[in-house]
Amino acid sequence: MKIARILSIILVAMLAGAGIAAATGWDPALTMGALVIASIVFPKPSGVLATSLMDLARPAGDNVGGGGGISSNVILIHNDDIDWDNFPDREADGVTISDNIPLKAGKHMHRFYMTQKTMKPDQKKVKGSNDDCGGYELSLAGFYPGWEKAIQAWIAAHGISFKGLVIIQNCANNKRYLLGEPCNLVVIDALDSAWGEDVSKDKGSTITFKSVQSLPMGFYEGQINYDPSSASW
Image (cartoon, rainbow, N blue to C red; front, side, top):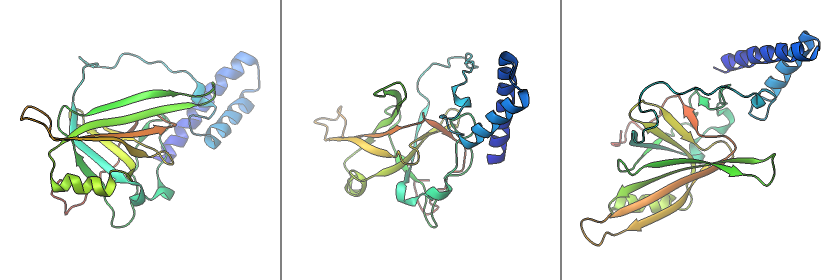
């Protein structure tokens, strides 16, 4: 996949270089060569080609702006379980990760249940102190029902210290959305447990995961490495 990404970068750089050369009268070969080298050396959105504006047409299908469709299948990956030295780059589009997230030997991804229709993913632009800085605030809030030993034990172990990545799996279209990135991990921003004073009130915990990062929410197309001994799967 990395070879395909490099080839796509080279193609875009050559097309952009040809356009710039035609407009300025510069030597086409030198212009395209300079853009190719710069785009490979700086492949992230901070690179040369990341400033090129792209068209954004209406997405295909009906009711594309309708809400819902997020399943209760939330997947957590602990920071200490990830092999960060081999973590894959995003593709040329800046959002797709098609390679598998590498885990250390014997480590797995873990499911975290949230009640249907309570899950609320969110993405906001974070303003910087000047025009050359900023980022994105990503969050996922949802409700875990009940005050049982399992959730209390999870809170005791991870409620304060959790750092890692979160994958939200969309049941309707099987897309997987990724929160968190290397050096900017997801943490638990808020945790509010309520007893429920009568049967019509919520009894359980509302938990909010949050990450402030340099890139927007990603699309993960790699495999889910689950624990085969877990009944959650």
